Every structure is written in C-alpha cells, then in structure tokens.
Image 1 (cartoon, rainbow, N blue to C red):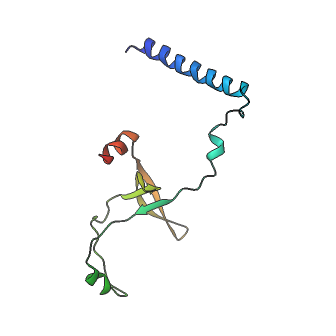
Image 2 (cartoon, rainbow, N blue to C red):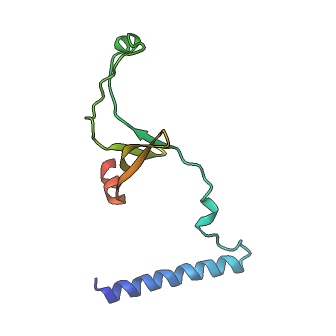
Length: 117
C-alpha cells in the first residue's frame, strides 16, 4: 500500500471514530474522556535482579550470611516488569543513598508479543 493510500485509510478511520463519538454524545453518553482519566491507576513495578531454583531442603538450610547463586551474571541488565509483563531492562544505580534503576532499553511491543509465543 502506498503512502497516499495509507493516509487516506487513516483519515477514514479517524472520521469513523469521530462519527462514533458524535453519535454517542447525541445518544446521551458522556463526553468522550481522554487518557487523563487513567493516569492515577496504580501499577505493580518489579525489578528482577536474577532467579534461582533450589530444593526445599536447600532452602531450609539458608541462614544469615548464606549466598544464593543467581542465573544472571554480574553486570547483566536487570529485568523490569509492570504488572508481571517485562517492559524494559535497566541497570542498578544509587541515588541519595537509595537503590534505583536506570532504564537502558524499552522492550518494543513487537518483542513483547514474540516473547509470549
């Protein structure tokens, strides 16, 4: 499909969306809301340093000072999840004596879809 056809197709989609919004307003529906109405929704953000598998016996033997070997190597990027879905990678930083994470790579929607299959 050429650029001109794509633009025309997008214009038709935009016009149809506008028609739907107009019809909904005329039918007594509330005025269409913008993205702002979800900005205060809380999401769970998890930063994963690494993973390990161990038996219950090994788990019960852990004590103060025990070291758990993780599958990731030192220096590898940390995985960042939002509501359980990986969305980025980053690196650990210390800011004002607190740990943080600097985003180094945002995972594209295409890559997130591929990781599901």
